[in-house]
Length: 220
Image 1: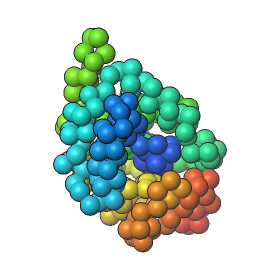
Image 2 (image 1 turned 90 degrees about the horizontal axis):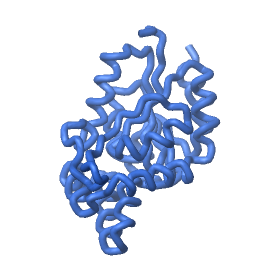
Image 3 (image 1 turned 60 degrees about the horizontal axis):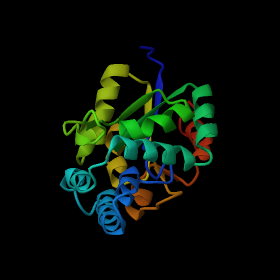
Image 4 (image 1 turned 90 degrees about the vertical axis):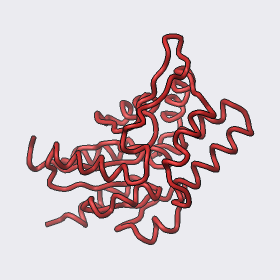
């Protein structure tokens, strides 16, 4: 691998897209399930409850089908952050390689990643029966638990040996990566979480702010 590689790592939900994919899956099961799932997601993203305490529970409540996941994949594309395509393109032109690191689901995120030109998606795989009904998920994937994105970043550093690594996201699970990233950038277009805003190395409200921010931070 090129030792000069720079990695720009993005959260997906409420960062590259306006939605929370798990909440959208919950919406398919009616307002009561949606409200419960949404509350659990908000608690995990704010850091008031551990992600691992709700991850399996939400999926068992929803039991999403393959068709449900495909529909959420389309929603991700429809609700993409309005400057994401421009920002990712500008960063790629400046020799930053984009990666998505998410506690969401790889199959749902893949269409948005393809639209944005992001080859690598580090996210949770869902498993389905031959008829498309829900079978389970990859419970061993790091981002299913608190601190898991830290482990993903450590693995990327070991594999790719980037010169610099920046993480961008809106939630506490993203903020947890600050000690292992060269810069953590908080994102507030869709959800401004006070702890993230306060503790981030930088904070933005639009992804097209990133290229200039990174030039300022890494100008040497």
